[in-house]
Image (cartoon, rainbow, N blue to C red; front, side, top):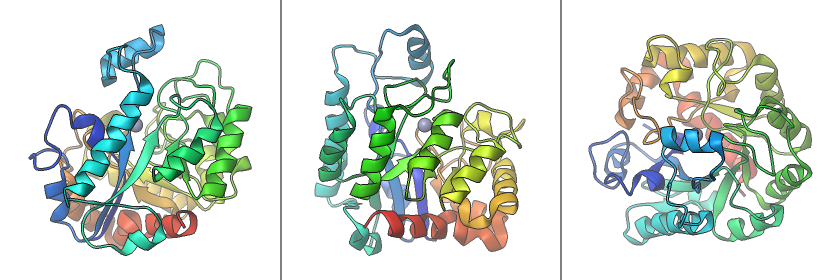
Length: 311
Ligand SMILES: [Zn+2]
């Protein structure tokens, strides 16, 4: 089965578990059992900022808490990890559209939150390191954009707008997962390329701060973009099941068009995966439950957007 997963936390988890061979939510070995998997492999460069809110979040979601590890160093460590996997012959890093047809496991380097950047022009350096997707925030506000946890939703800042424009020019996807509503709406105004929301569900189906409301989904669809249905339990429903993932896909597909629905599991980033969707091999079951829309959601829509943006 072909697969494009818009979000997996391989590098961040690699200090705690064997993401090469482990019997865990996802590993290179598990991915190899699928036909042509492409995974957005996340760069998650966050340290404890000693901001009360972020500190509470760090306790919950596991920042690298040692303040002696600078964010930039963390970013470089994680990039180095993916290059190490490639040198070991386990994966191919996607450097451009030509690599989309490479055999084996492909990784697309995807940054989650840009607080580590000094200014938007650091995007030139990220591009040279083959980072091909940039998420504007994680769960706290930055100088680029307000996050979904913001107590004052200021949307994109001037820096944020400039970063979106640069990403458009450099062939880097812009990801609005974890962003505030106004950040997403602002990005949809500025961006000339389809936007992605790599891992989120529908707020109409489940009222959760990480999910997208109808206005956001409409704005995203107008850019030609995609939302990756995700397995984050709290965003799903009362039971946290694979069927609830399908409910979110059905709502978005039937309301805004199936070409906007994709998959972003957040495997290795979630503590408790959905029942029936415990590891990446379960995409077979998900594909069956999605019926005629299985291929679109599991890879076709993401591939279309990749071929448009990542030239
Ligand atoms: Zn996330």
